[in-house]
Length: 339
Image 1: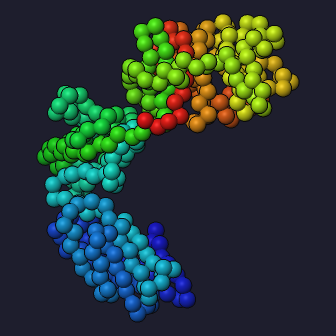
Image 2 (image 1 turned 180 degrees about the vertical axis):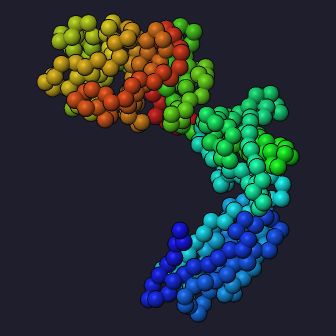
Image 3 (image 1 turned 90 degrees about the horizontal axis):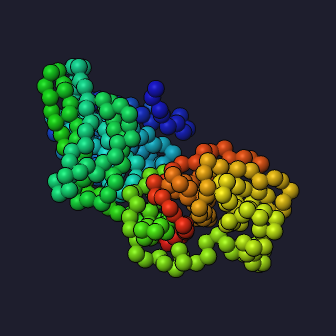
């Protein structure tokens, strides 16, 4: 369906020939606007024109946004995304910079004007230095023209691969990308084996790493003393109401506490009975991340998390997700400083 811009009887539109050009091929932009006296073209690769119906040649394959503006009015503008193909199959990503644990979409660019049979196979090449792939693919099907994935560590040359079979001929493409690190919050864990930091990237997580710093956060009283409305509460204060309580946190007028039966939540005013969050095992430690609105806790199976905002009458609409498999965790803390 064609999209046009219309004002005072002027409809802005243009055609492109060929519709699937390749790099180095002259592309004709036919101005079919219903009126106007002034033309401004932006071809999306840094080049422009003021001709009514210009031609332009793209030097490199890729996706470009072409814009035509009539009479120097932003209200009289038409844009169109144009894919320029290589004579040799290739693929690209619209991102200009790449960071770890960020979702990216890679798109195959196959020049196929005769509609030959074409198939795709994405793969993860091994890193030249570490002999390990640093790409995590999130697609369950690797035979589409697009790939959704993210990088798991910084790298000067992170590699992404694609095999294309076009009319029986196979082409293998491996492109490299410079992947930057990304500062983020962390979850700290104390075990008999030492202290650990786990950096958090949205719903994706790095492997647990030994962390010799941050002792002040872990040495502080984690869930045995809290301040609410300017009043400090100790664990012993609340144990008079819940004798089996072993630790607690207060946030958003909610009381979160742990005992030898698991993890619970209740209204701070005591008007409701405690509701279980996780009663599958003994809860050994807990902490609240008020930056990302999450609760973290440790049991015999590892460290778990879930949002603590968005519950309905203290009944959570989400299920716990395991963060790692650390065992014997005695303390948890969240580092709000991005590192």
